[in-house]
Image 1 (tube, rainbow, N blue to C red):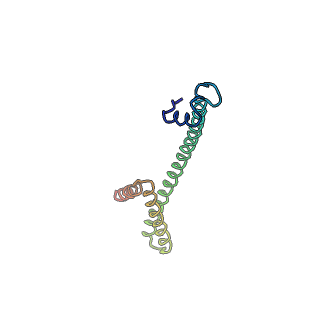
Image 2 (image 1 turned 120 degrees about the horizontal axis):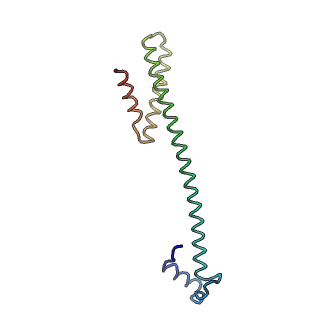
Image 3 (image 1 turned 45 degrees about the vertical axis):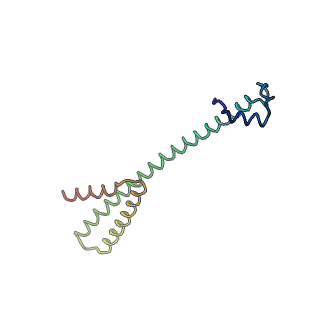
Length: 136
């Protein structure tokens, strides 16, 4: 239990009077007042700690969901790039090429925004890695 500050004691004395200080165990004593206050703060601290634990757990869940989504989008982007290279070699389906090109562009925009939100450069590193693999 923390000790009351000088200001807290003085404000208590002004509010209730000095004569009540002699009563150590009474309902209106300073000790009873500050113990009640300390108990209230302890309970409040316990509730806040529980809320923080819940928020940290939820944050981890959301980070895992974010990572899963981002990895899935990386996979789709890689598929679209692969499919586009196949279609361009065949060059028989202009409409299909346009559809995959649009999907690739949309995914690149989404992944760039996700990189900005989480403060990483994973998408650009992924693109560099894909180019390195294509060059080999």
